[in-house]
Length: 421
Ligand code: HEM
Image (tube, rainbow, N blue to C red; front, side, top):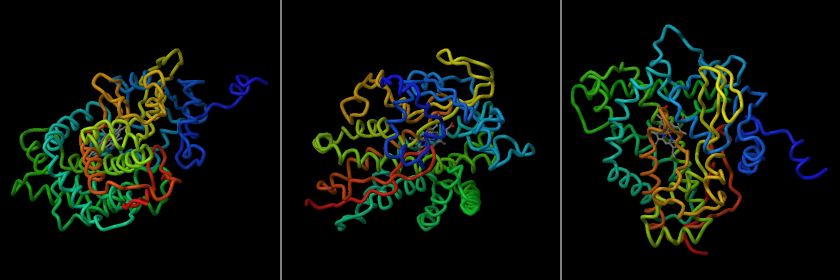
């Protein structure tokens, strides 16, 4: 049998072969994704009923298509994606905007809620540099005397949590509680969570919603310089948002933003420490932190895939897609597509020059990540300040351990040493 025969008789990787809990996938996601992209870039997976897109051009086109749907309840009932609704069955007596955040919401509610949130949030992020610098400096100053630490739990986790707490307007004395709620709410991202974890996540969501309701009432009486004030004022000026919609979507900023930014920071530091020439360039020219963030997002994007649903039959590169079939853009595969990124497995800061093809780590179109600018800002500031405080930082062990959360790529821990050998 020739090599070509062998490769064509091997089963194609399906959606369930792209799960972080699978040790072979986790050890090298690229091997499986490159195989799929080479043999069947538009793959109708018979096991899950999902269509998988592994090429950059197909993924980009899908994300930018404004006609597609998002909520799992609109998917074909026989598809795996539809089964996500079983965890939280849709209650038709609750208005759509109060059932789910913008992350899974369809039009017209999605735009009605996203537009005022995006306007207020982006204006805050635009002015957030001093705040994020302060957060990063405080965390780093707590580590200054340490010879060794776990960069995930001691730097990459606290930075995004403290940054979003301060943008929202959480009082300093409530930030420890806020940190605990944030970490528990993240459990909702795991569709395979246990009943116990689900109960913990629900309790944390209720506690956070109660705190946000308190803050909203407070800010209506006494406005402050924070996002909660922006949202209640937008509502008072006529933005068509209920209090519950504001709470759900401010909570979505934590769910969408904290773990992902943690993963960006930890993966980026690991990549830089593994590529000493690129790190030396960054140390010599801290402005390259922008390129380091973009190259990390391309090589080790925190989210492996995102989904859209076909409202009507369509074809993608000649492959028929049925009405209500879920279509997954494999962001990770798209970001290593050699058609768009030559030598895609090389970590190279010089790729990110004006006019270069953009990665799709933040998705795209109507649902594109609302927190991209904040994540980029946090990443840049951490990369600049970390290596200024610890110029001799190095990895303590070479075998990385990744978390097993499906669809996410992030280090469970990253032990580092701060002194030279
Ligand atoms: C490196 C960090 C991050 C990555 C890789 C990331 C990635 C993504 C991706 C892939 C999507 C789905 C896009 C789509 O389906 O087209 C998304 C949506 C979203 N992200 Fe992020 N994200 C990050 C950080 C953040 C931050 C910091 C926040 C908020 C503080 C945030 C909040 C959200 C929200 C609310 C959505 C839903 C947007 C919508 O559906 O309209 N994310 N993100």
